[in-house]
Length: 400
Figure (cartoon, rainbow, N blue to C red):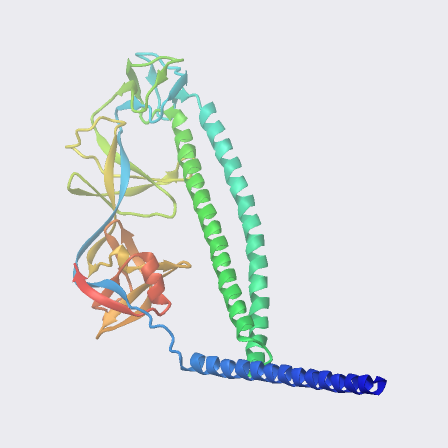
């Protein structure tokens, strides 16, 4: 009986060992099947990627503009002050409190005498506050630039890693998931870099606005002191010391003869020979001097039919060009990194051409190197920038 038990035990052990061997064989077959399926799936994915076509780039719809020679007048809006070699009405150009008014009615004054002093403490305080704000923005720009440099470094490193991954992918040394993950990371970094660049552009734009405000206030500062433009007699006094006055209010009247002309103050980098006002053109000549702000003074000859009072400020047009030429509209010109481009449209093709601006005004631009150019495309700056990068275009119509 004991022998039978031992024999039964041996049989059961053999059966168990056989079952284990079969399980191992089945497990190995499953692993081989999974690996084979993965390899086949990877090959299929590679074949699909190789056959896939890049998405088509949709052309940008733009308009074109026909260039032709015509009589061109370019002007810039400006102001002129009515002056007289004989008499003047003294007006304040800014709002404020009269700090000094040292002349009395009937008193004789000479050209260049101080007539009025307006309190300038508030203006100086505003300039100080704006300059502090400007400095704060500059520091913020430096901080953003540091972040931008770091992200650009990360992008370069990731591109190098991605290039290695691409090589490994060719020999099955890397997975397609790793390759696509790196592509996603690169795209995300590029997006972050653009965000930082836009931040810098926004901050720089804010600085320009502040600089413009500072310049405006500094320009107002020079109007806090009013000097006599002529020699004569104070014939009327309309205000007194300590009085708060509005811009444009008459303060004094100095009598003299009736010879009147227009005086224009221009920055040193701006020159002109002609102005236009009330439909009439007048030649101007430089007075060969500058005021406290460094601007150059120009004047017309005497204008007999000028009805405006001495000291009055009139709107004028500063003529920057007058002649027969091709006029470029501003929406045909791309300003990029201080270079200017137009996009010549001919025979269905668009080609960028760098131009040299000879003259400009509110009406448009005259360039030196437009010989042979008949049509250009017109669009917003962001669209023109995309055209410059090579994006195809479709011309919708011809605008005049």
